[in-house]
Length: 73
Image (cartoon, rainbow, N blue to C red; front, side, top):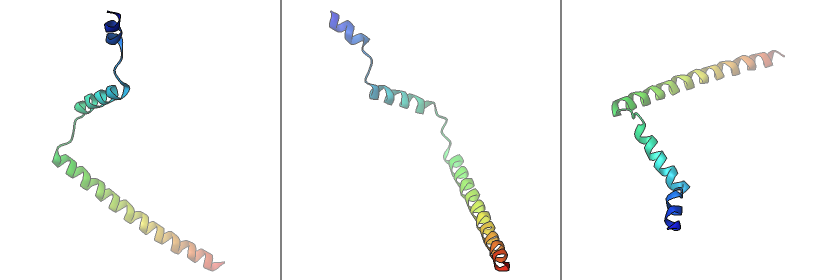
């Protein structure tokens, strides 16, 4: 009788508990539709392209500017 009470009070394995809690949390997630995911992906790619172009132009301009300054001295 003492063994059955001890088993009832025993907590589940930490890994099992972690997996159960993870699955429970993932079921609560509001997943985007395929259309939303596609639109957001295209938006991210557009922002990456624009920012990399801007940084590339700025890098080119600054390198020319500092090259000009160094050539003066």
